[in-house]
Every structure is written in C-alpha cells, then in structure tokens.
Length: 92
Image 1 (tube, rainbow, N blue to C red):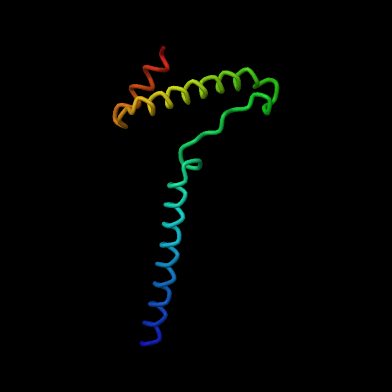
Image 2: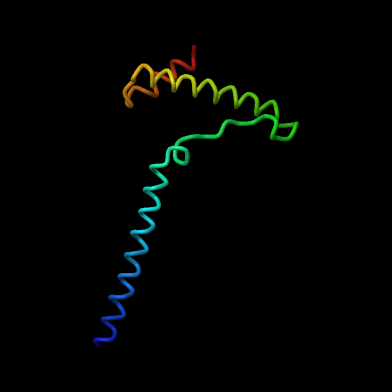
C-alpha cells in the first residue's frame, strides 16, 4: 500500500511541474508583444502574381490601420474607446 502512495505522489509532482512549465510558457509568450499582438505586413512581392493585387490591398489596409493605431496612442485614447476611435479614423 505504501509503494502505491509513493508512486501516485511522484506522478502527481511530475504532472504539476509540467503544468507549471506550460503555464509559464504561455505567460511568457503572451507578454512578448511581437508574438501576441503584431501581424506581419504583407509583402506583395513575396506572393504569386495572381494574388499580388489582393496582397497590395491588404498591405494598404494594414498600413492605414497601423497609422490609426499610432494616432490613438498619441491621443492617449483609453482602451475601451480605442476600437471606436480607430474605426472612425479608418473611415476618413
């Protein structure tokens, strides 16, 4: 009976250490801004010719969105009002 208790305790420790490691990894990646938030700008030259026009349009949208986000940062818009501010900026 004692042997089973020790084995269960060891496996529980291994399981908890693994979970702690996984949670730490998730938090580290979430804290890294480039990984969690940023999208890469589309490079129209890196896509095949039949998709180049769509890639150019997407890049223009991304650049405009980035500019509006920078304006929101400069205007110190609160997070709750940021989406409205950016949408209004995009419509202009």
